[in-house]
Image: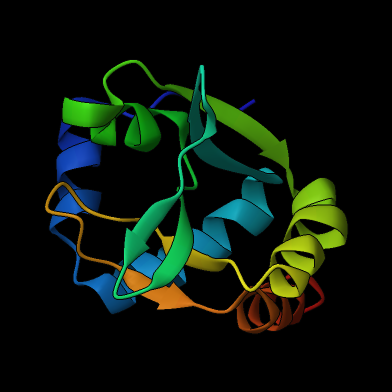
Length: 128
């Protein structure tokens, strides 16, 4: 189990440029063997932008919890094992044309990629 992040650590990750948070997400999810999303009574949080739908995900529970607020205040961080993420979630998201919003910051800025691209990049790190 990962040591919980401190507030200064959360703030430092939040201030990283989107590209740096993307790389951090991949390295950290492989190291910790987990991914975090948000879910509430209506299911998993799915964001829509310009006709595309994407699932926001983070490498730490605390980052997901810090992002939940406003219209998502009733949502709680939900854990996905890396095995399920790579073996079930990403292939299913690719079939459904659901994109991935990787580690959004407090303003919602993030890299949005296809599930296939994230799968390929994560597998490359996990086998290196």
